[in-house]
Each structure stands twice: as C-alpha cells, then as structure tokens.
Length: 182
Image (cartoon, rainbow, N blue to C red; front, side):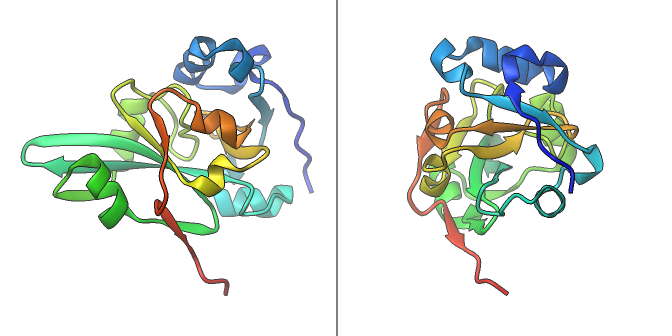
C-alpha cells in the first residue's frame, strides 16, 4: 500500500493548482498553515480508488461536487462538500439554496474551465469568488478531511473547521444523506 507524506501546502506550490495556491495565500495565515498536501498517483485520484489504494476511509474524505443551478437564463454555481459515505441532495437542499428552478451536477468541461482545476482534483480552496461553498456538518467535524488539491496528482488534508471557515462557506444541515452500506 502506498503511503501518504503530507507537508505544509504553502511549502509545496508544485502540488497544487494555481488557483489553489492563490486561495491558500489569500487565507488567514493561521488557517492556511493547517492545510497540508501529499503527492499521490494521479490514476488513483477518484475517491473510491484513492481510499482503497491508500487505506483512507470513505468517511475521511470530502468530495467537492460542483453543482449548477439555473433559473431562466441565469446559472449559479456552488461547490458542495460531502463525505464519500453520503449522497448530496442536489434537487432539494442545494437547488433551494441556489434559488434555482433546476440544479444538476455541472458538466465536467464547465467545472474545469470555471475553476482552473483538473477534474477529479477540484477543491473548495481557490474557487471563483461568486461561488457558494456548501459544507455538510459531518465534513465540518472532520479532524483532517482529505480533499483534492486542484490537480489529480495530489491531495490536501484540511481540518473540517478550516473548510467551514473558507470565504463564502456555510455549513448546511440536510446537505447530504447517508448512503446505506452494501
């Protein structure tokens, strides 16, 4: 089993996408200092493959899901952070928070173009300033949640409290529901 070797993210700009680096630099120094990064095999960036290969529990990783909400001609984007053991409530909670008539997972090409990050590595740090960041309470409680680094070849370790304190972040009850085991 490959190992994870975390170091301070600000010390390893080569392991984060450019928008993530800028986002880290813009954070309060006490928050940014808590964000750590490790290189990984890029072919194992997807949550299930990463967790299996590196021995990380699905309940230790936070998926960052980009959602597009539409009302008429207006599209609003949000990043939603949920545990790998839960399912995002896109058509209920997220749609209402976006004030949208319709909400769905953003198309991959749109998510990549708008964030400047690689698909499978999109993370809440460094997102466009007009995006909401919706955080499931279970993610906010993590001692050290694993999220993308903006590239597929690295992962960040970020305390849930730091994720909840990101600009434009809000902890939302009912954002996700547990997926039955099996």
